[in-house]
Image (cartoon, rainbow, N blue to C red; front, side, top):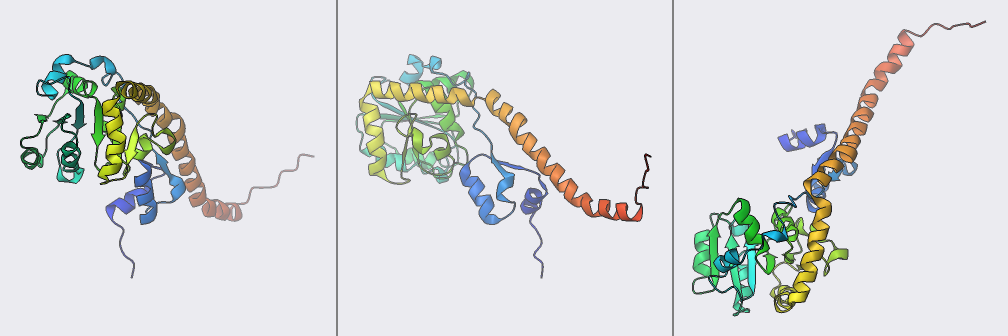
Length: 275
């Protein structure tokens, strides 16, 4: 009995090339066997490096995010406030950092429960920010912490790094594609998902050492300048679209091959004598 293809499988198999936001998604597709490995390409990181820039650092925004204590170490998190983001992990982090402050920028179904979890703690919930306010929020923190294990791309990590803020993120999903092994400790830090000790070993030195924060933040910014949307679009146009065309031509040639063979035998070209 033949099992019918799902819509997702049909689309992947019909495509000449599949672009994915992370190596983790590429592995998932290969394991599902919905397309061949050589027809999967990583879609380069893209970030608006002008909108997310260190120049947006703002004392007024830092006052707001730190609840009036800008001299305290400030951790920020930006993103959808959902239970799948493992944001409760940050409660364990803050329990060990009584001098630090944390700001959650974003909204979602888990916000009310998360606010209750942080009752009595130095935490600020701004809700959704957009435009220049969001740019200022990124650039005005000390460290961006990403505990989520379910990020397919990690756009907020890109935006934080573009803003010149060091990132400490879970080694899961698409985040290791942004901070690969050879860049750990240079453009950002990764920790084992759910491992509080590992996380603190990366986070505490950044909060305690301003020079280290500035060095990592500057390196992160320089790395992100290589991956703005202009560069990402150029790669799609010049490399990945060309690959899609090559696969399309190959598939067409394979499909027309038997017909061409039959045509040549049914209607052979007349021999031409040039003498």
